[in-house]
Image 1 (cartoon, rainbow, N blue to C red):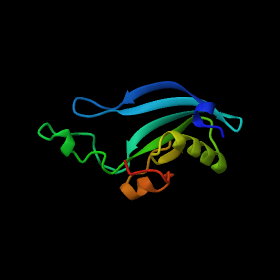
Image 2: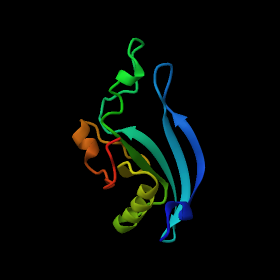
Image 3: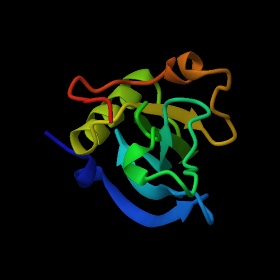
Length: 133
């Protein structure tokens, strides 16, 4: 059975966001082919719980922090190319073989939903092996 590594190669990886008291998010750009459709995707790790910040006050130990306890998901953005439903599920299965976190697909220019955790979770594709981290 084909895998993500068989069809995609990493173009770049960088840290986005972050600052003096924040931790940046890893953003990776991949190029590949799914069912003869060439595409470029950008994958960023994001917090599921809206408003959960990567900020940690200076008097708080990192082990006491609640940051990330709500879990994370992979934000997969189609930079070039797009897939219909069955092809998206094939790509989701390949990605979830490598990373068990839930994922969300969107096109370039689409914004993530605002308005709380429920709206962010709506549209996520979950891996049965996901342990909530």
